[in-house]
Amino acid sequence: MTPTKPSNPGVRRPVDLARAHGLSAQAVRNYERDGVLPPAQRSPSGYRRFTEAHALALGAYLALIPGHGYAAGGEIMRAVNRGEIDTALRVIDRGHALLQRDRETLDAVEAAVPLLVGIEREPQGRNVVPISALAHRLGVRPATLRKWERAGLLQPARDSATRHRLYSPDDVRDAELAHLLRRGGYRLDHIAGVLGQVRDAGGAEPLAASLRQWRHRLTVRGQAMLNGAARLSEYLDSGAGTG
Image (cartoon, rainbow, N blue to C red; front, side, top):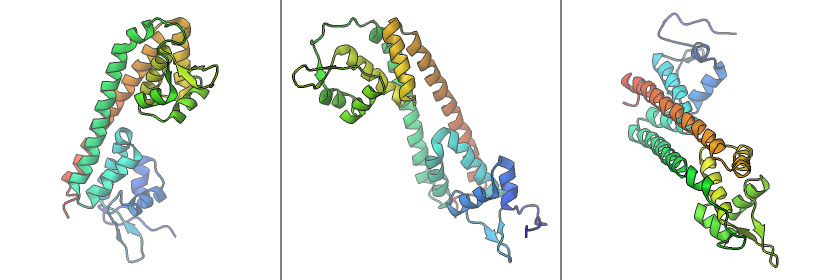
């Protein structure tokens, strides 16, 4: 039987919290079970009794997700609900550090676009590097480079005797751009299309358009972090994490 709505206006059912955010009541119960929401009291009949604090906690968690993601958002909320505010702040700090790193990476790519696209192709066989050297340079595994090749991102030549892959300066350039765009969250098929257009057209516009989209995504993420911080601060001001 569905419980009747509590007479105390400060007490809320799972469905009351859920409806405010377009969630299911079960999702709210799961959040409490997982520690994202603080423990709820139970009625004599066993129903959960949520309060305004739970509503603030749910709002904070959902606001943290766009900027920090589900995993980090949950980690933040669980730490707060345990009273470990410093732990929660460290997770937030990591998120901002990653955002700053991505901004610096994007700045570097944008500054390098004219040079990267304008590099003249060197004669085949000069200054080529093996797959191990290129993987070390990028900080990835050789298997990652082979995967990028299958996706059309890279087009290395092969040694006629050993059949080992040989990466020219242009291949290295493409690999660096692919690596940077992967850091920006782009799918392999999208990166392959961008690199293909750059190779065919010899212009920077396709890459520049992708970088503009990437900067927009970073701006949206930064604004989402601000919104999440505001909602989390509101939850903390209500007395969360104080014991």
